[in-house]
Image 1: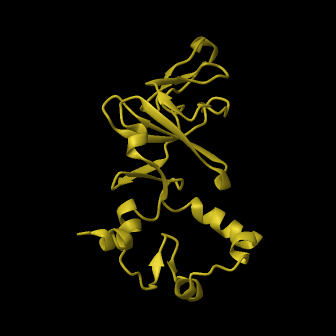
Image 2: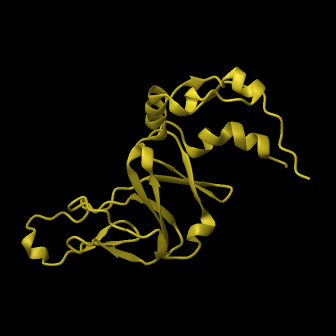
Image 3: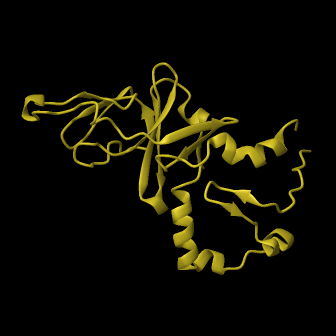
Length: 187
């Protein structure tokens, strides 16, 4: 039988400063209902979820080249497209066409090495680059490089896919998970 290691409350950081676990919750296991109903707490957590690493999927969900999944972070009004390119590299992008802000992918998962926006059919490759624009001559001065999909920071730990919506995360995924990953070594 697998036994989890004991955790003693310690200060930790989520990339936004040092935090201390709530000693009452840690000692009793009981969480006050205000944690779930407080608008102030929800606002603080919503802000935090835009700055920390979020476990969003498993690598098995995008195992093969062309596999993709969409994950929504509702409290941040964000839709993220996680995609494995033909070389096998995982990538994450905001699931928004850079032309008119239309949601690019409407499904939950699938396999494709190219997506076409349903609005004007701009086509993007698995590397996020804008590959094709119908009637491109109607867009003088179009900069295809600047029109690429907006990347989302992505990292993998022990087969789990994490994203960070902050364009410049304050911590790497390894730094963020250091307190936890050290506890699971040699288990």
